[in-house]
Length: 472
Image (cartoon, rainbow, N blue to C red; front, side, top):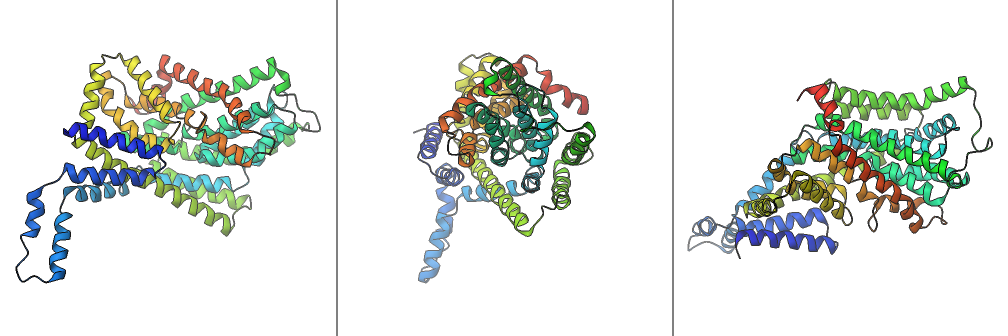
């Protein structure tokens, strides 16, 4: 076999092992080291260690030297260097801080007050509870960026209220699942940090570029909810005074000030300091983590147990991301060294695709990968395969990253591996069935595709803010 064929075999074995359920990070490491041993094998380098043995060497020295000889392969140097590269990556330093901010905010009892206030304020809007839930999800997603946390908390908070208000089960479920996935698109998205580390695109420009597309998607979701409530009132009946009481304007203003403003201030301080160049993403994440703790203390929700849970979840998620990066960097380096990356580039170049056809093909592949894989695995493992092809088709990696972020909303919504639906099913009342949840998310899935089309047709939705703040 030629080296490029070995590279394709390496990729094929990886895909097979993923479908068999092997841990992805450690599978990447094992394949990278295993095939890397073959790729970097140097018999002369290995035998130089053996030649140091003398005839009078004892058993321990002999066996130790043979062991060192077999390990005298550059793949182990590469693996150590890649691990150091990941651990010293300044962009990835922001990940644990943003995660900690999110987990703290989740436990600060802010979201329930926010949903209650928005529910009252939007009482006269068709589908008011759905609109309130989507806005709450968007704000909460901005503060956390953790899909599972948003879906779970909103499922416990908003889903029972909507079902009690006679909302259609599938309609209410779709709202929660779709709103919960916004955290991987709207800054400070953890996904965008990971994409920045994988692609080399400035995280600051990515955050600026994702704001308008994120608002477009939220707007499409709200338009669908309001339109469906107008055309089919039975799926979202107007709330009665008993379900959502009228509140005097003065009292409503106080409720907004105590529920909305603290979270809005935290979000603005984090995003504003990044977008206006007042702080690096890591420094802004530190501000967010401190602000989240202060909010938890102000709401009398900070306990040692909640702090310990937040730290544990932060460490666990951060370790998962770092292990994925180490494995992916090692795997990709070996795959490229064997000629796999060049082979794919030549194959795609030989198809004579237009830029639009290339983007459609890439997004279809990423959409299909979202069925068996999570977004982190797609971004860290497969997106780097497309990145070297972007100059060939004149595609800006910033624009490509935002399209991918929109597309990855679908990875949480598309059966059979719709994790957002499974998160919701895990905490929903027994009468809420998985097929009902799947049926509810389908219209929102269509809205994601509409948003992607709008971003392609109007690319300035991505480029306007980065160019405004930082120039071309």
